[in-house]
Length: 202
Image 1 (cartoon, rainbow, N blue to C red):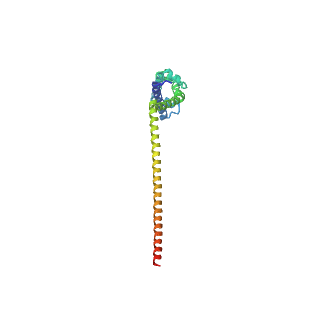
Image 2: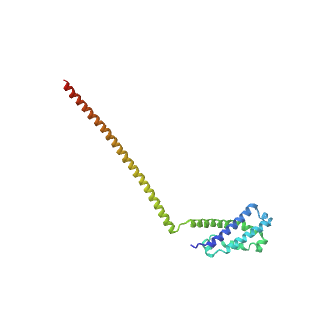
Image 3: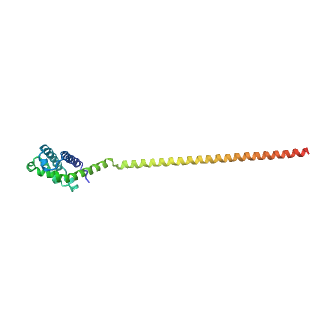
């Protein structure tokens, strides 16, 4: 799919102009054609925005319009003459119909498409190329190996302390056995000496 970089910028301009019109209409809270007819300043401002939308839409490439053909681009392109079109100047009903009906539906489609395109650009901006992906994979593998090595060191240290504790316990047991044996031997020797002494005395 083509990148449509220029078309995307034009689309953003169209979306901005649509938002300007929606803000203008929303701020003045037009409820009817009569109210719109009574405000010449707003009519002029909105006509200018409509003309900007039409001019921008006419600059879109045919490939872009074909790619996103769900939007009626011809309606938008026709708006470029909004400020000069005699029909629109003499009949504000046509312009009001554009605002109230056509621009409401098509405008929302343009805003939705603009949001989608912007999201795609954000995703492409942070996407990794093949070299970056290889670097990221290598770094992740190194981090994983480091964690595994650290875990193994902890296990080895734990085993070392276990062996040390076991050796200490064996040493303590040996010392106790040695003390017991020495005491037993000494006591037995003392008893033997006492028996010999008694025999001599008798």
